Image 1 (tube, rainbow, N blue to C red):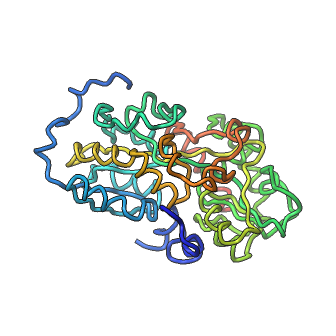
Image 2: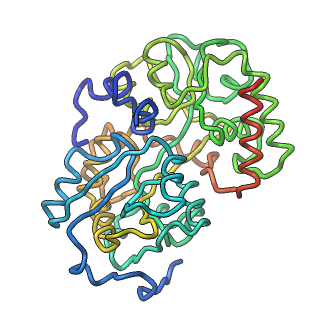
Image 3: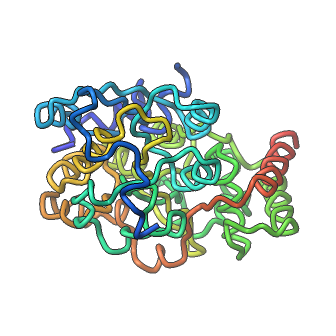
Length: 368
């Protein structure tokens, strides 16, 4: 967003544009050989079209139009509500999408299911603008299948005037009755289980069933003190005064803080979730050459900066930072302290059997 207009963040938090992750809930290897990639280098044979499958409110105000003006390629963008919906849409075959934006753990899951094309880095020269830490990824070694789009954290949003100090521990949400009835957790099983595991001193990617059960017991014990498991509406509950503490995406809290300075955000000292949303090309994409051109466009520093400022999430693009304002670059909500990031983890794909164990624990928590 080249400059976020007053009131825009609040409308996203309170109105139809709840957030880029929540809007639709109520509505509809390095060294890879180029020869292994289908049709690349024959862009002239593709029709000038691109089908983009994305979250809502998660693109710049003129990104798609500028791409069409620059390349002559018209973009159709469809919207999905969550990663589960994206996965379900593509698992039985690609219905026609060229570029998708999965979360990092879902990208890993989709690669394991042979749903994602490898990328031709030679067609994405703007890769060089990425920060070094984002040019590789534990969930996608060598960036064989994905390019980073935006990144951030999941931590604690809170109302400063209603809490006693800075809630810099997950204890405030998972192991205390001090704010009973004034707490919301994200409704995503892996996320709230993961943060409970961090509080207990474990990895949020543990495959130890005893540790998973321990986190389950903690959450069942704490459940009477929770107002709700929110479907990415914690920022709305916070700004409306329904809760004083909420587990939320950093960008969503940053949006409402811009309208209400009594709201703030912290990454707990035990560590939290670092997430990446990535750009990927699903197998069966009808326009893979255009898809590479589009991904390269998104990684252009000026284009990326305009997107990042508009949606208020952290960019992995080092080159884009020269075009971003100081208040964005210096925001501890957008770019948390290094110590907090060092204690945090990405959610990784842990295999279908372990995912099933997490989901069974979450079913018991909801039934308790």
